[in-house]
Amino acid sequence: MALSQIIVTSRYLKSGTQKSKNKRRNYTKYIATRETVEVREQNTINRNNNATKNQKQLLNDLLLDFPEAKRYLEYEDYTANPTVENASELISMIIERNADVIGNRQNFVGYMAMRPGVQKRGSHGLFNEKDKPIILDRAANEIANHKGNVWSHVVSLRREDAVRLGYDNSEVWRELVKRHISDIAKAQRIPLCNLKWYAAFHDTTHHPHIHLLVYSTNPKQGFLTTKGIDNPV
Image 1: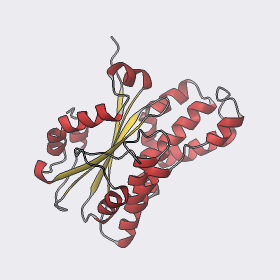
Image 2: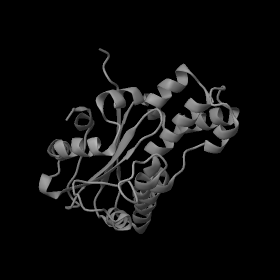
Image 3: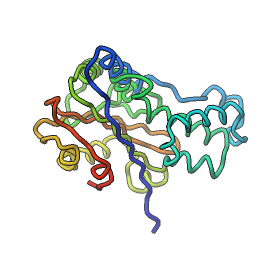
């Protein structure tokens, strides 16, 4: 049986200045509201056609700015079959995985919770370990104003692997995070009693994925090395 391929990216959202707070706030909203790139163009162009000139130019620029995107499943699909649809998927994922650079914490949380494709749990898609509803604006402001670093992780699977393994809905991802939260805390060097997290599942066409935000109530805590990212939980 072929092994499933999983792609994980991790970064942190800095704290400090008012500019940093605004960036976190916008990032939170961004992940809740951003629309898929090139949707309008796909409505008028056959998605199986070769990628457009504009798509290729945009991808060249994005790959220069974010060379790590060459590790993405979407990049693998695009290089194997450079269609309009695959180019659009790659463009969308580069922007999504680097939304913290483009926006800020608050917009990012909002984007996580509200973007097209998110599996909503009530009025938005944001969830954590608690069963009571999350007030999106309150969570976005909490993350925006946190004085320490907030870590942003994205975990992505191919559609066929997500369906085969059952990771094609938010509840399964929520239970997975809850089951391994002590391992996540250890990897991030945050005492479990201080760790807070929010997540959202995005059920995109080709590569369903989860956004996970992690931070400590103690702003001096939290650290993640490459070894910590590579170690499976």
